[in-house]
Image (cartoon, rainbow, N blue to C red; front, top):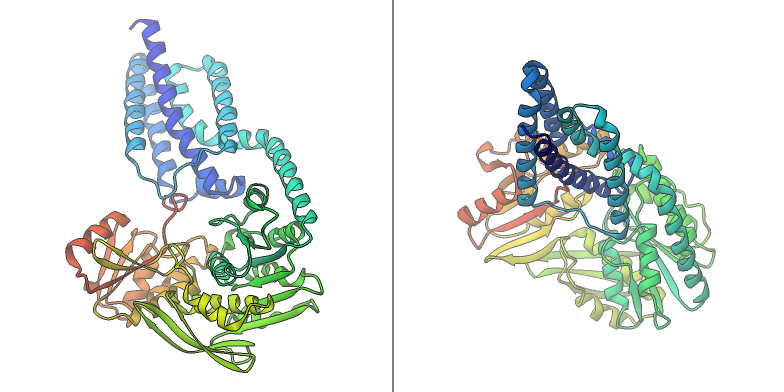
Length: 521
């Protein structure tokens, strides 16, 4: 074959394979918070079928090349080209739960990765073209490592520059009331609830969506905070030791909230004790004239000896020692009702939100509003207007069916509360779930317990992903749940197809958790 044509064909192979695998590698690097440790755990995970299939293909091509000897260049070239075309086609058709977001940072990563790839191809010219073609597949995943190290000083410099600007903006606004909110679960819901309760009386700004990292908070301050704002409600995320301490020093809130504490992000925190100590920094690092707000129903919060003499206000439902306690809770498809005694006065609250944890979050919002001097009657009205939080026990109609959408990052406490809500619904009750993820060594135990909790709460269980849900299935069967009322499907789309064909409009379907692509391996 003409040498020029061979070069063109191999160039097509290189570009095709690079496009698919570099994109996938960058996507997973982004979903793993641009951290090499997390990315490595994904890449070398025993269930990472994407990478395993790639290795199998490489081994097959190289083996064929060795066996075929003189014909290997031509055959391997066409096999590689066919594989590249197939992978590009698959990539264009694949629908990700969370696709690669091409931010300015990702554009820099693409540039550096592209340069490294070109250098490798130029230096690799000493290798046979067919071997070089298959090695590019593996290299696309591995190039993340040198790319991350090269771009690290650039990203740190940009980050520090913007953070310094944000710190200056905060320090110059002496009037601004700052509220920090953290917890293993419920941060975003509580942030939105607090905002809905106080926004009619105060000009507020909240961190958008799940902007709870230093860069997310920095962007919020630089781009959205204006002199007109009176209150800044800041969600603070943490998935390793030191995160909350860093954010507390960054934002310096006067008011701090801890919604709940539990086994979340154990892969990076390594122990529950580390999680407890880190989350409680939200209270311990408040100024002496600050006020902390805590959920006393959470055993880890209730038993923690707070090393700060600032004022602390507690809320709860089960714990009778809470300063604000909800009683007489009633759920329906329209929402929840409950009573609270505030400063000796009994108040009745109505809300469209469902679930005990949402009522706890509302109690935290009520406590903050009282501390800010908002009238109690106004607080009652504001609670009735609280908007449903997207994907957090959000009641919605889809094609005539009633769904309770709790698809955002399920956790051991919230998932059981969601089942409690489902159990109060009329007619047939259905749960669709892939189980819980990112729980380290306790993941199997927690998913097994989740399955055991489902009997009497659900009539039909649809499990998404055979491997991911095997412990839930075992928990269901061990607890005596009828096997004929369990359906295991591969994708959420299959689950919805089944729902639309076999359920009725009077049924209620709970969507419990989503499955990010980084875990869907």
